[in-house]
Length: 174
Image (tube, rainbow, N blue to C red):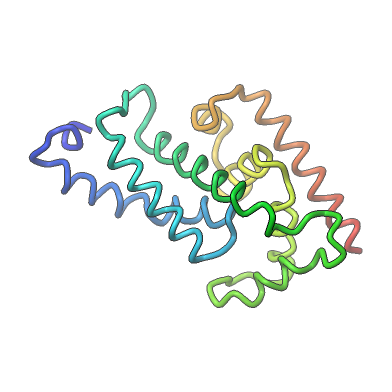
């Protein structure tokens, strides 16, 4: 962190930070926004905000926690802006998102993975973030509570509700 605070070493230290966290951040963002190009754009925004906000980083949490918080906020902001394009549970062509994912040249999953992503996309923002961090990133609730600034109990409840909704989504598909 000292190298990030020092104007002489800031740029090099930030480049290392970008190299270290680009891929993990990409996957968190990608699982929320779903599209490869959108995920890349959001990750770029995350690092731009981090660069601009370096002087305001209080070091009350780890640097990775701060980056994930920015990443989640940027992802959720992106989703809110794109909300009118998202598939809703009442959409007659509820498989549209899964079909779109399967057609994405950067998507390397199968149909079940695409349907899981569709189910996750239909979750409310907080549940989507909690599910993504816990299920895909295998993040501990203690770390998530720092990122999302909420209690571990609330996160566990959100995750449980998200899992229930996703299970219902798959039951309706059978």
